[in-house]
Each structure stands twice: as C-alpha cells, then as structure tokens.
Amino acid sequence: MPGGLLFGFLGVLSFSFTLPFSRVAVGTLDPLFVGAGRAVVAAVLAGIVLAIIRPRLPRGRQWLRLLIVAAGVVAGFPLLTSFAMHSAPAAHGAVVIGVLPAATAVVAVLRGGERPSRSFWIASIAGLVAVVAFVAVSGGGFSGLQPSDLLLLAAVVLAAIGYAEGALLARELGSWQIICWALVLALPVMLPLTLLGASHGPLVAGVGGWMAFAYVSVISQFLGFFVWYRGLAIGPISNVSQIQLLQPVLTIVWAALFFGEHLEWLVVVAALVVVACAGFAVRARAPRAPAPRPST
Image (cartoon, rainbow, N blue to C red; front, side, top):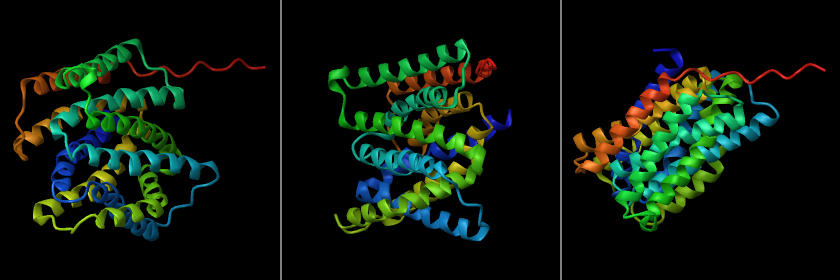
C-alpha cells in the first residue's frame, strides 16, 4: 500500500471510533461540553508538544489558513457531530458522514488544482448517491430529514474544507504541526464554550463516559490527525481522502460489536455499497497534474 494510503488508513481507523464514543460521552455529559472540551484537552497536549519541540512559527497567510483548519476540524465538526449524536445512532451517523470523502475531493479540486480521473469521479459520485439515498430512505424521504442529519451534513462541509486546507498546509509546515497550531488557535473560543457546557449540569459520567471523552479528545482530536494529515500531504488528496469511505463500515462494526447497537439491513447494505465505491475510487488512476500555463 502506498505511503499516503497507509497513513490515511491509520487515520481513518482512529476516526472510526469517534461517533460511537461521542454517543457514549453525550449520553451522560452535555453535548457542548463534549464537543468543545475535547478540543481543550487536545489543545493542552498540543501546547506541550509545541513547547518541547519548538518548531518554527507559521508565517503570514499561514496563520489565516490555520484558522480555516481550526474552524473546520477543531470547532465545526466536533461540535456539530456531538449534538447530532445526542439523538442519532452512531451507525446512522457513520453512513451520513460517508459523504465526507467526496466533499474533500471537491475541495481539493477547487483549492489544490488536482484533476482526478473520470473513473475516480464515477466511484466517488456513486458513493455520494448511496449515502444520500440512505438518508432519504431511512428518514422517510427528504421531507423527513432529521435535525441530526442536517447537523452531520454541515459537519461534513466544514471538515472537508479543514481537511483539504490542512493537507496543503502540511506540505509547508509538516503534518503534526497543523493540528497542533490549529488547536492552540481555537483554544480562546473552545475554552469558554467548554465552561458553558459544564455549567449546564453536573459533570458525572462514570468510567465509561469519561473513557469515551478521553478517546475523542486524545485520539480523535489529536493523535489521529498526525497520521491523517501525513497521508493527505503525501497525497494525492482526492485519492487518499477516499480511504475515508471505509469509515462508515468500520464505525458500524464497532457500534454493533462494542456498543450494542442493533443493525438494520438498510444500514448494512448502504455500508457495503459505500465500501465498494471506496475500493473503485482508490484504485482509480492518480490525478492528472494541472496543465502548465503557456509562457509569455
């Protein structure tokens, strides 16, 4: 397996537990506390790493681009998915999040100038259609969309932007530095939100709830991004991002095996279709480089 795909898979493997653990955490803790608090814990770890290693500071527009990453993967995605998991099963959320690879590929094309092959787009669009059909059928039609579905789709958009921008920036600063700087930049916003969430009720979660919170804080929000951004930086972004189409089926397996969720046949079929699309997309020919501009 090429390096980019290997690192991408390790990132997806770590992210595949995020929705089930988020659902466990918000079962006893306030969703705002979980969504913002995970970023605060990860920011403390990021600050320690930055203080020890002392990498060079980002420069100029790199700070603005880091803010875009922070808005997408530190604030937007964790907060929206935490509120969504308060009412939606993890397996359902996993299939909806299956839109994310296609969204990331679109942003990579718009932002990074990649030009994926036709077979890549066919496989990606097929996966997207499968996810949209699943949401429509399971919700009784598009008129039956639940607020949790809308939250998850909004989370997908923000995460796609954060993934693509972070991948491009990782080629300049390094993969692990991206999430560290993004977490530190987001801390002034996420800390007050965490305190607000904590004020909504007593922080009593039990061992399972706190272990779930620890996972989404240390692995999902911090260490998982080390390998994920490394894979995207090696690229191509549009191809490596399709590895995340495997995330729905992994999340569904974990939700059933370890968290006792009942799996309906529709969820299983949708996940298998999405995985098949992932295989075709990853095997598609690598993106073509943009045509060189004529010299003047």
